[in-house]
Picture (tube, rainbow, N blue to C red):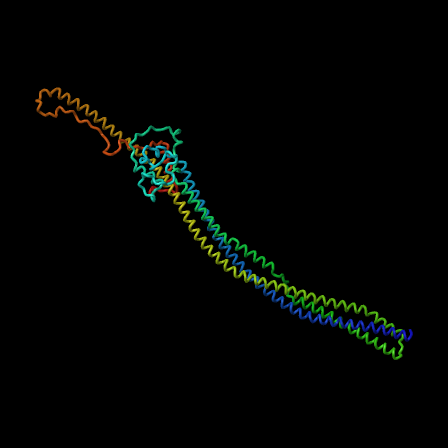
Length: 504
């Protein structure tokens, strides 16, 4: 190899070596700066992780409190719901009992003689207007009754008409029941159905009002539960392991790469010094043998692989740095979202006391309305008891009228027997006196005992002054009497809910 060629060749080797060294220094300097930044960022990541974990745990504890509030509200609503359900059960029981007695009243007929008379004042039921087909059905005050409105009832109407009425007409013959039954009323016809409907409608409206009151907090538990789920889903999902190990591994990997890069940089500097010295020696006139030239060529040919490793290490260090930056940004995002979550919790913390207060107010109002509904049940129970008393009194009336008929017939039989006996005695006395007068009267002076010629006194048994000649009593079938006895017996046989003899 010539001297000039050797000189130019060495210059090119020096330039290559210098460029490689400068590039290596840049990469190492950049890697060192990135490594320092990574160290700072790793510290930030650990700090941010601690903050995020602390806030997340705090939010979790707050959510537990919210869940307890939701559970408390739900439990209170459940307790109130059970009370309402119990009331519904009692209402159904009382309503069925009322329907049962009303159906029983509707199945018990009242003969037409009981409410159709020629004199309104003599009706068994008081004033019953037979021309309208309904009679006194709406609790109107009979114009012939002396009962006050407060004491007026189906049973008192029956008794009032019986006390006040006077019947002077003759009893009609017993009608055929099959043809006459179409004209009969039932005990239900004398019940104020409209008043019952008004009471039941009031009960239903108050019950719907209770549902409306309770519905004001229907959404509270669900709203709180949905809010808890929404906040819980928004919480960051953090790894079980702390980021300390992760950041330490990345920093250690960076240090390993930097050490390798530093070793390569030293090789580049040594190679550059070697080539530079060779150029100087060549310029000084020293010639190199083939072995020296091969060594320099071999070292120069290794420069691309060394630079490739430096580039790769620099890229790896950048990747580690980027991972740490990404982790920091992720934690910063989590922390930013948690700040909004804390704001939501603060707002929820202000709302929950209002919810609890509202629930307490609603609970108090529901208790008040439920108390009113309980009073309605007492009203329904009172109606049922009143109608049972009404039916029992009517059955007793049937038996009482039958007893009075027996009494009247017995009294009339006695009167008829007395009349027959008195007539027979009068006829016999008349015959005896006539025989005495015909045999002895002619022999007595006319001025002696003038009364001897008098006829015997004739007797007539009549009612007391002011009383009717014959008491009016409705005609009652034996079947009705038997049914009345059976109903009274069945009522007395009931273990509970029936009327005892002391109540009749």
